[in-house]
Image (cartoon, each protein chain N blue to C red):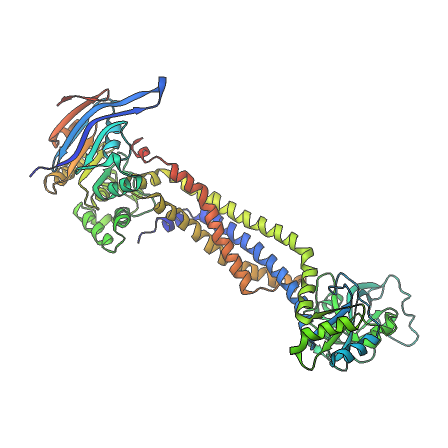
Length: 226
Length: 387
């Protein structure tokens, strides 16, 4: 059964004021159901990253509403929003952004501990990393991992709290084609087997292969479906 | 639990050592100064508390033995005994110079016909001469290291530091007001830095100081100490020109008279030490935080609250402060041993000093955390999407 996980309704985002005013998003509507992979493409400055930030509750829209599993996140207090990001949203960043002084396992475990504060976190982190083929690299710090390994650790970190949706910003940008393909396969598995929604922002055409829908964003509006 | 704080802290070892070193030297300074302060306080209090007496009688208005001069007629000893029903003892107290070596550095040899007091260039040392009742021993040296605690005729008991600094031992001589005394005992805990106490029989001190039987203080033992307040009132109303103190009050008053002079200096240096420690930890924690500001942004984006991030930064600061505290305490102990042995200064530590320094190090952690925390609070988590 398909449920709407993310519902972005007539979202407008304006940065700056007066002459410096820039409308990054201009009435964007988007619905994503569980198990669906949506890829948003578009030129630089089209508003892709702004949309991802608003979907993740990191930025608040100037106008419009954002619902995550029927809860309106743009009306939440900062504390509720932080909790929602931690428990319901998984983030994957272009530059991996792992914590440099922690090992692969600790990078995953720390996010789990923020939510639970229990000893299951370690076990859970190990399980996810094993599933992503990182069993032998769990105790390595990011500096000793390859680009593909770092991105898999970042994916493990995004998954550890069992979120409703994964938001990925250029997840294959810093990876060669083989590793990029592996990462795409993992994202596909997350959506199709685990039933998670995945919203990807990317310039990478290869991701079209795994996406259920590809939307073209330009000048703060969806112009077409590819 | 994964400790980002510990991992961050120990990842950059040079910065960690600078941070810990800053706290350690700050704690060393604070603990050492408080140890010196405490030593002066203890030396002053312990001597007065060692009197086997309940009350101290001084000339009216005199508050202590260091800054004000008290002189009492000898008949006041008898009057005090009559009024109180207790036993009173005189005490002479005068700071003066003692000749400790001849001009050529040789020891003073007391032989018949030696022209005393003629060698104006003889080496001198400042002492506070205490003339006490040698029959009862009240007012005498509080601690003896060697020799006799009761000086006989022409004998003097000097402090360990006086003896060490002047190369004198039991059997050697010193000259006071044209009279040569033989050292018969070595006492301890009478080194007040500017002077040391020396002890002679009260009659000899009165004689060389030409006090004509007068004393500086009277020490009074009561048969029933429970009537002490009543006795104080009786003494002050029946004997003119005196102020009567309980022994503990007089001890405190003596300590205050000395410490009030040093307290502002010690206070200022302690504050400087505290601020230095805070600034060093603050700077290193600030640098460490700014270097990883994007990682803090990631944690915020993922869902860490500012409170959680505060604890991460505070924990880093706290580790630096606590490790620095223990190193500082060890350094303070080593420095105090050196100071005691090499320059004969007195340093006494106690638990209150260690506790105070510990509290200071914890406060340093909070102070050091403030600016980095403001930076983190202002960090926009949206930065994670910017290249």
